Image 1 (cartoon, rainbow, N blue to C red):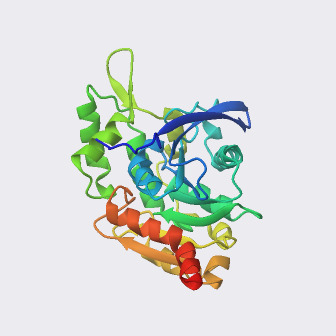
Image 2: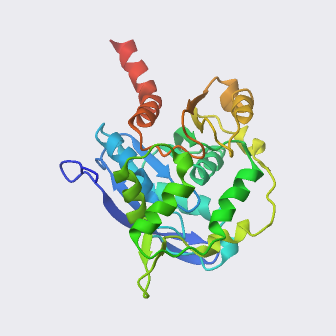
Length: 306
């Protein structure tokens, strides 16, 4: 499995209280790297995933001196569930992640978001005075394809229970093929950190089944978020799996032409080969693309001083 960092640099497991529309809940996060680092990176997972998906990327970035924080969104991982299914929506996610940024006590952060995590980051970056320095959207953009949402919903509508961790891992290998070529260790890591053992000895995935309520419709329509995207004015890196059915190449091209960030030539895009929705960010070549984007401004400044 993973080789941990030296000097007790991570992972560290923390929680904080976040106020939602129906009271406070405890939100958990996993932290890597030196807390005193000048650069803090927040990594936010997809719809039914959790913070431990970022362990490999977090270790990679932490080894380069960055502080990396990956929260479990409400109802996932170690975080508490929301009291009402309808609360699993953008306002709750914005509130809890804003509370996280306040908890970290830093003036600015870099944001890496996969799918739903990208949506939250884009929504935050569009706000006036947002403390997001650089934004990485992993297979998420200003138009979300309804057909892809329907596909994701078809998995969630199944009340899956598994006899063993091996069975859960095989399930992941089937439904998450679009993540790309993961190692055996990475598949196992995902399964072990996504499993909850129930009283009858079976395993279930570690998220609140109520999250699936949004996907009960027999058909899903495309979701347009251009009004949000056009207000983002920080540097943005868009990662797209080359066969993604959620983020189309035509949407990426339009994002590079529309909005404040595009008008300042702050938008770049990289297509990840042999992936769909969404690249796992566990492959070293994907990590290097992200690292280069995050440190580019610093590297350019150092070159000018030399």
